[in-house]
Length: 149
Image (tube, rainbow, N blue to C red; front, side, top):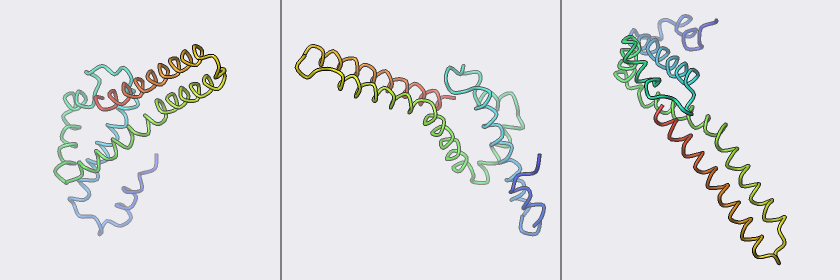
């Protein structure tokens, strides 16, 4: 595969890169690739604790060294922002659509009940609120899984 744009820039403009920049970039790539591989191999829902990035670091000292050097070069905040952005994107793709689908069902169920039938209105409201709470709980579980993975 072709080198990343950063590596391509390093190769085409070597005088603009200090040895520390090159080292930080190499370790950054290792860290990001590891986080990405971990997320692809172990999706957030139902990940056992032994299948986390922390476990990968324990099993791969080179990865732990790369992460330590990323932190040493002051890039840990950027790595965390990237990881949270990735987690947010996964939540938006999975849990958020489910929440809004439950909301649409609530609106439809309320619209289909005659306002004169108070019992049916109350039952539809209870079903709708239960469905929304289920969707919110699902969103919470997905967020907790992302944070603990």
